[in-house]
Amino acid sequence: MNSLKVGTRVLLLSAVLIIFMVLLAGLGLKSMRDSVASLESLYANRVVAVRDLKVVADMFAVNIVNASYKANSSLLTTAVAVTRIEEAERLIDQRMRAYLSISKGARETLLAEEIRTLVDDATQPIAELKALLGKNDYFGLNQYMVKTLPAVIDPISLKISDLIELQLDIAREEFELAQARYVSDLRLMVGLGGLAIVAGVGFSLGHLE
Image (tube, rainbow, N blue to C red; front, side):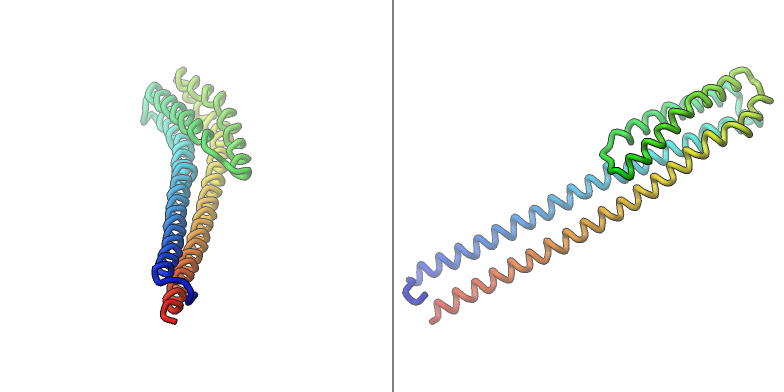
């Protein structure tokens, strides 16, 4: 070390510090990029998914059932009830398509397929419900709401509740993974910073000898 000229030592020290600074900057950028990607995935695949699933559940459990009960109680005309049910069907189809298009893991795919099957199977019973409303068949409507409609709607609501719970569990797992990545990156950055300080001090002491 003593044989090196002062200028050479300064250049070496500068080069080492620059290398460490570039490594720290690159690691910081990677950490920020990973964080943004994780947040984008969390929003697109979890937050939006929960919103879409809740809309589907509400359309079945609230709009379709509620419109039927109100028509049966003469709080709505049957024509208005049919219109609301058809609006609910359009929204269900739209949100189910949106949800099924997102990336899903094995656990989520299994539940999603079960819900898709239940929703598809509900098409015919809902058509029968609209037919009863269209004929103003209040007796048939009352019997249908008691004997048939709950068996169609309840399984869908339960499965969607299960899927929403799974979505929240997956979101928590992704959050914990992001936290672990942050801690790992922070430790690496601190380690590189420490090495840069040690290198700087080492070169400085060598210069003084």
